Amino acid sequence: MSARVVVVGSVNVDLVVTIGTLPRPGETVTGGTFARHGGGKGANQAVAAARLGAEVALVAAVGRDDLGSGALEELAAEGVDVSGVLRRDEPTGVALITVDRSGENSIAVASGANAALSGEAVAAALDAWLADEPGVVLLGFEVPDAAVLAGARAAREAGWTVMLNPAPARALPDDLMVLGPLLTPNADEARTLSGSPSAADAARALADRTGAPVLVTVGADGALLCDDGSLAALPAPAVGVVDTTGAGDTFNGALAAELAGGGALHDAAELAILAAALSTTRAGARGGMPRRDELGAERG
Ligand code: RIB
Image (cartoon, rainbow, N blue to C red; front, side, top):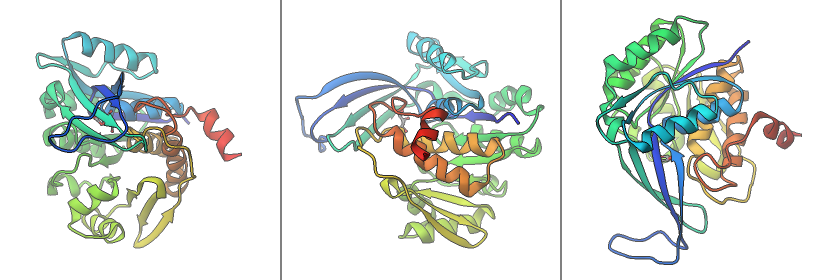
């Protein structure tokens, strides 16, 4: 069975300074090194799913600039179908990222063309994909609500599984929640979205809203799975962390690929946690994203 994943989300170019400590507001820290990487949560998720063997299409928007052309070339080289990525007059999204010696990061994003992805454009781009054998549509919050809602509605109507990674966190519209998406916030996002101080309570509160399972990622501790009223803690393996950028994206892309391939939610989440852990062992959002044979080796 082929695993079909369509990602509706963002494309950025990541400008990364790796440095001893993250600068505080108003502080200048010197001594860093610079690298440029492909980024954007949506594009990263698409690459993570493609590396695990899924058939992946990306619906997104980039500028008509060199950064946009380069981003599309990189994605196509990863096997991602970019025929649904629109070119817009706005500049391609850019993320300024600092990564400290523990692998922690801070990220400032200029959304550019990502903010110009309309609901109509998403619905039109999805048409070609959703007519076929169902899979998973993975949506993210680095594009406007209208784009997310159009993607969720089209996916639901076509009988595809709807996954929503609400990152970065913003209010969850009721119109979206009634479609019952599988939510995958990290712990901070879950707390913000639910108003609950604990990640476990947040997972339960969000599941009550959607009537669907919720997976809350908790960094090096793995994830909490709230399914059918019960809560399970799924641990992550200990790894040598170099850069946590894109770990959540790897989790989401891997989870979508596994679910689209017919995997059960619990098993798919365990594999996604392993993929996300491995992704932190190299620099860049996509640097450590594993291919399927690497996961096999880790699982023994
Ligand atoms: O999740 C990591 C991503 O967030 C980076 O690639 C950056 O582009 C931002 O979108």
